[in-house]
Structure formats: C-alpha cells, structure tokens
Image (cartoon, rainbow, N blue to C red; front, top):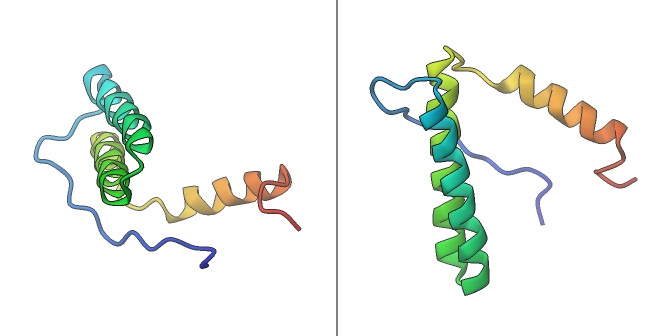
Length: 87
C-alpha cells in the first residue's frame, strides 16, 4: 500500500467562486461519499470522492488559490504533530 495518493491537476469550472453555494456543494458531494460507502461499491465511492475533490478545487479557485502544495505540507505537519501518521 502506498502512503501517498497522486491526484494530478484538476481543471476548475469557469467562473468558480468562493461562495456559500460552492461551500454547500462540497458538503453535498461529501454526503454522497457517505452514501456510496454504504453501497460498498468501490467504483462508486471513488467517483464520489473525485466529485468532492472537484468541488473543493472550484472553491479554492474562487479564492484565487491554484497551488495547494504548501498548504498540504502544513496540513501534513499538523497531522504528524497530532500523531495521525503512526510511528
């Protein structure tokens, strides 16, 4: 098992915006992941996870954020400090 997931570039929707409506879209897509897990169908779960990533990227683009590498490194550091990666 790998300890990383490669996502690659994500094309964002035209006119992406940082709005309550877009933030709600992230929640809606996340709820669909929750439902897909109950189905137990791997392809459905993966597809719904991709939709979550798309909606998050659209929200980020609305903020003018197009490179998340530094933020992801900071997130990893926080999670390491919390012991979430094991030993």
